Length: 469
Image 1 (tube, rainbow, N blue to C red):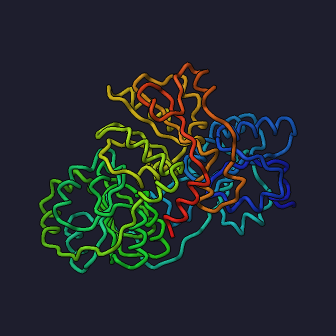
Image 2: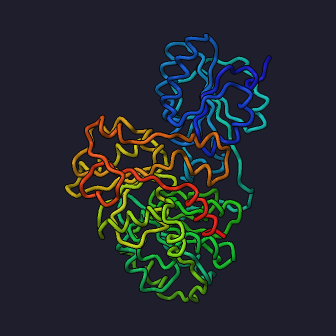
Image 3: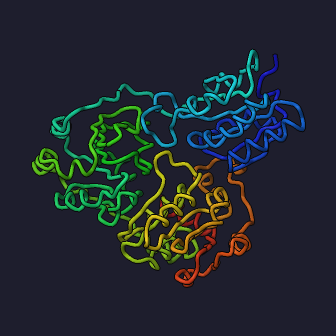
């Protein structure tokens, strides 16, 4: 029996970091690179009908798998040999709320004939024996280090007091919840305890650590002896570093999810903590030394590289007013917005599973639910993914597209250049086709509905190289 990776005549490869490890073994097949999994899986159905042979779609983890379900259903009821290959997070992260980690097996129940779960080595040796189409093959990509810590759930705040009693230099991280965490953070600042507030918390402007670079530097230097996280799973890079370099972690998560393969969890929201005497009594009796470090200033690099994506993001924020309503897409958009944010904004986004899908549609729904102007900031690939939503943009929504000509997050991760999917497209004709007023001049933001900005990729690369050095 022939190995699966040798038998495929066509693979629609949907760009993603989690399935990047599958690119090399699948490269011997005819590859078509896609960014929209729903579109790719339906293309596969058409190719199957033309060739009368099995065809595969390969996706990253999270909602990318869910986007394939409509085509899987069609294949199931049409008896077509569609193969879904999904790259997944390690088993120990399942059910934890870790980024882009959902239960893939549950997604395709009722739309598949066979399901197999395996590691990368088993995938390389997998033979298509005794299968019923369509097939879902879930490949567990393990990039984490094993450790002895476990997940512990607590039922009361006495655990917080016990945890903090033996710690000297905690880092508090305020991530995000379904509503703003600003009231809790405003009161917390009086305690003079080091903390990092992400943009989605609603309190980024109050953060005692001004940039993620400072946060990562201090983490790598061993400045903290534990992490206390309030809110849902953070965006910050150190959350991923913790799997390789674990510290004691205590999570206040209303969902009861640690976001890691280890850590202690208390099911309290920021609103619960704001009203908790035990929380405040514990903190008021805690003493910690202030952090001593030299924070790097963005200003000189912005002057040196004025056309970088980071500089354009700061220029955009300068045009926005305090308390403006912002909807942020994922990937580099939210990272660069957080890096440059100095004002108080009302910030929204989809950070539950961190999927690229439906971002513009979610911003439209947000705009339909408020009388305020909503500024939706997306990347070019994210906008292309949700292009049909441009048909019904309400008048109080402004779409700002940062067009860096591809999925540049993969450049930052130093992954195979093919999955960047570089392009030369712009949104002028598309906007006009949907009868939306378009400009590429930031100064015309107030008088337009679609603003497209074009970062200089060389400026961005040089900026980041110097910033991270």
